[in-house]
Length: 251
Image (tube, rainbow, N blue to C red; front, side, top):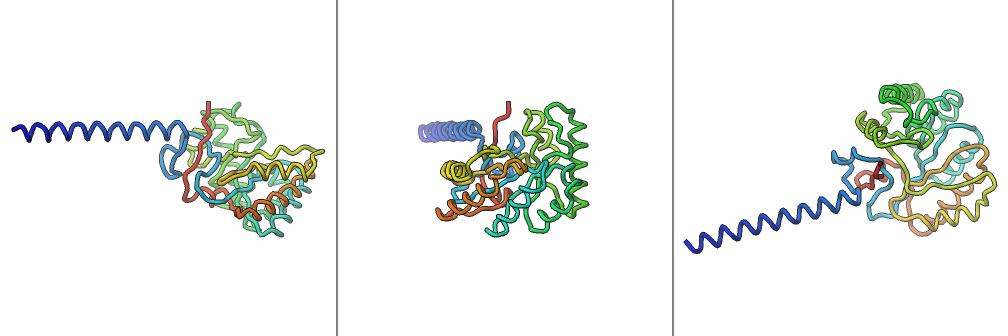
């Protein structure tokens, strides 16, 4: 009888201890926004970087206007044999169909930067859905499918926007490092600052605008420096699969 009582008590303490461990781990994961990419919890935020312990970085390029700098960027990536992820605006793609096709033909990954350039945070869910569907149809006509990655136009968003995009079945991709390049930026200085700030799993955002003439050289120099340090450059999908990811907490 005494043995049975102690055995039962021991089991109760084991159950309580295991529950405590589960609660601790759950709290830790939720507080750092780290989830497996195929888990349902992924749908709570926008992806900002990979948490794999590997020397990999993804270059992403927002393309909404201009046709000169984007071609120079493509030339740099071709010379370096690097594949990047281009977030293309649908209207831009219609105006610059040959360049959009070139991005696809050179086997870069393509995401949508909205069809129109209107911020999603000011639009209804129905309008957001229509905009994404219009953009996806535009990419299909350019022989790119399926669309899996979306970045809100003008980089303006809120929690409901991100949740709605995710509910539609797309991954909302942000970035961990924004390449803050101005028309008068010194490419040497900017590339050194950016390269020194990069680490495993980072997603970089560059803007391909014709007044930002330093961007192609900055990309080239960053690639050279990080490759000399042993880093590889991948597309966003390659960076995140298989991986743990960091989600941006949306207010």
